[in-house]
Length: 130
Image (cartoon, rainbow, N blue to C red; front, side, top):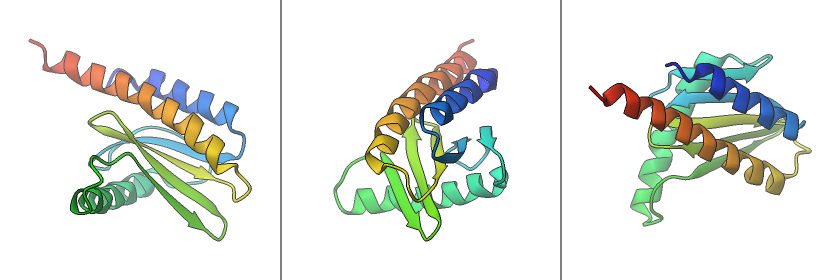
């Protein structure tokens, strides 16, 4: 996809604004890496696991009448994994230190995921045009 440099730049800007992030990944909803800014994490594995979690999350929000999937936050002993919808075909997954301000994480990540959704959905729309 021709948007990879722009997507990567958005991920880097997000990590600059939120220094407690240890990784950022944009992936398609079916688990393919679109861009990554992760120093230590295995991006392909995280993208695949994100797709699996996304499937369960979508079913859960639908089954409970909560509407379309927006975000998922998982807290582990050593930090957070947060996934945000990024348009119709992608997700933003972030890895964060345990000391992160979760409110700030959500604020910055929601803005970034909206921008990524515009970039990625726009690129897909251009591909669909004759």
